[in-house]
Image 1 (spheres, one colour):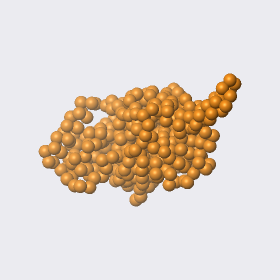
Image 2 (cartoon, helix red, strand yellow):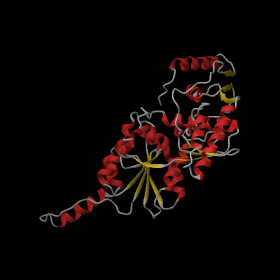
Image 3 (spheres, rainbow, N blue to C red):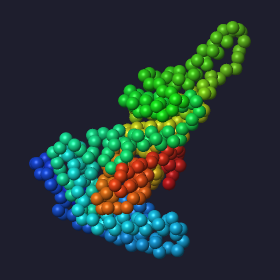
Image 4 (spheres, rainbow, N blue to C red):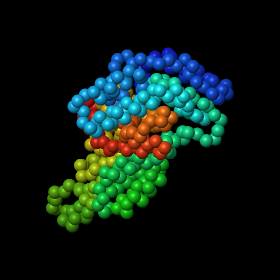
Length: 367
């Protein structure tokens, strides 16, 4: 993710906080904080993202409220936005309590700077941490479930429920997730990926190899007769969920398509994004589905995201920071288009997240 503002100031700020942490200081605050002014008036869509906060945003919100063409629902949502923005901008005592060994310190400092809010970090030596080591597979404070759990729920909501029609292919590290999917329905079955040759593996699990063997037996009955034959993949299978190493997606999907054509619907787990450098590499997954936020797909389409490496981790951090701000400012329950998905923030409760399942096509890059 690219951070375009005053890189020098951010670098000095990062060094200041991290150096203080290393020398044993517990309470750290950005004493040089100054309210920034946006270079140009922001649009309502940017303000709705709840990532940066400026006093001038309230003027933009008010202008929309004065529009006569707004329907009742839109007017109610924008009024809620104005109420929450006032609360967030007026709150002057934001505090984040983090373990002094937190490995996400630098990323958080960048997001804090960009937020334009006076946020204080208290570094504490404690075995408990507000942020787990693995931000993807474990629930972070303030959310009802982990990013991985929400990604699986996104796939499950869009699955076919026909008996035996869904196959899960999984690598060892995703065995627990595969088991959770199987427990969702007795109609789902799973097999581990243990081969080294994607083509052979795909031919085997899709039934193409057995189709070839049947043809060979038939042909052997009359070797002088030439028969027209095209190997056919199994017909009972309709969907394939892939839970494999990020590096294996590129080879696995083409192999499955080679033997199965367009007979199947492919669901990629969100891990498919974890080792993608250039977003254009997502076209290797073309016509397959993946849980990805509307925010992310829009940023990809507008070329605002140059690399997806580390993007998921940074997205979880951004949304975690957002929930802390909403909580501490006393904001009202609301819906936010977060970095990881649609976030339904509820005061005095955990926030629920929904990740849309999106089809990867070339249109994604044509915005």
